[in-house]
Image (cartoon, rainbow, N blue to C red; front, side):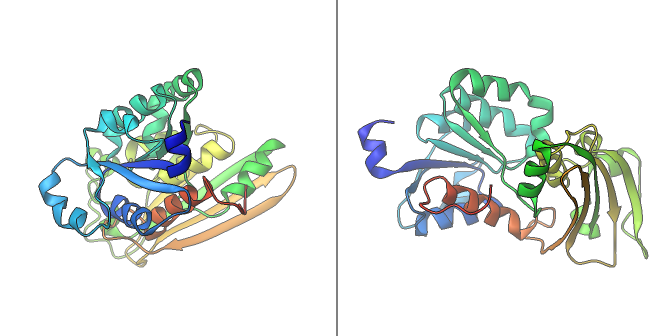
Length: 274
């Protein structure tokens, strides 16, 4: 890192200014120790002009493949099909990429090798799940099984490829319906906007093929509900969390807060949790 970067702290760029990206940009603009918002990439700059004008310091607006030139950390907050075009240029330059659409990482896992070869890093935030630090610790020993049950309101599941391909009608549900049961890898293909949490869980633990998940459409819930059970040689533990949806019903409000917490850790004097 050169002297200018050392004095100014880490520069952070954000790809996408949806419900997650705007909250992260606002937090950076209001001040996170040792970090500064340097650039953003958006599909339609005019649509976000009012938001940008409200920031104390306007970041550059750049194409997504140039964010790595203007930042030390690039935060991916875009639809999963854009993951590679955001992450690859950043890690090729030896920069860090924070990946929110972690389900898309499974189909682009060579990016991990690319980052390793160029001195870059790929950081996956905890996101909509608690307890990933416990899973990380248990994985140092032996984890025997990881099971997860996700229940989501109807609006949060509409348009998922698995539902569309199987022509499942969820609009008129009166009671919970189990849509899917299988591996986290299979779930990520069928529900790319819904099960990033399961993929993060799998990468912290025993991998996407051994991590088992059920996905339910549940008209009786108003929050995104996740229940996890882990059996390991060091501990047996279960976790539950009920996340309030953000403006985007597919995404929990806590996801953006998790990214902000991860960014705070990059330069924080005191870090709590693994």
